[in-house]
Image (cartoon, rainbow, N blue to C red; front, side, top):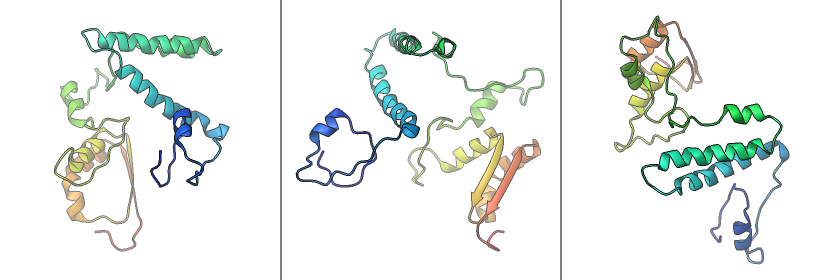
Length: 194
């Protein structure tokens, strides 16, 4: 590990063994107990992702991945007092991801499946995505439209608002506000908005 620059990562035994403290200044700081759960869970997330991906491919790969995950939860259950937490969080063997809950008696659409497909952000709700303005990949415009339609509330902090920029998703903003949901906008430049 000789790449010069700044870092912010946990020092593993492997990294420590590659740090040449005779030739380089090695900056580090103590992991505080208040931050440990965040740092360690992020670190373990990467390790667990590697382990789950390493389960051999085959017709039963998903089933084995779920079984492995549940085995880890049961192991954790044996280490802590709160048994209910781990029992309640065992994964269902079907391996499904919840994507929506809507009332059937007073539906927001006659075709709820299509409605959810049209408003659900393509990037998902749990992962962040960098939009760089290129033509490759996902469109910032289409994702903003989906985010607006799927939001419960919108809090916008922008430097200013121009009609040319807002007209692209004006229809979605109107549908959002007409449904009674809350839109709050703060602009930071005085007299720059249209």
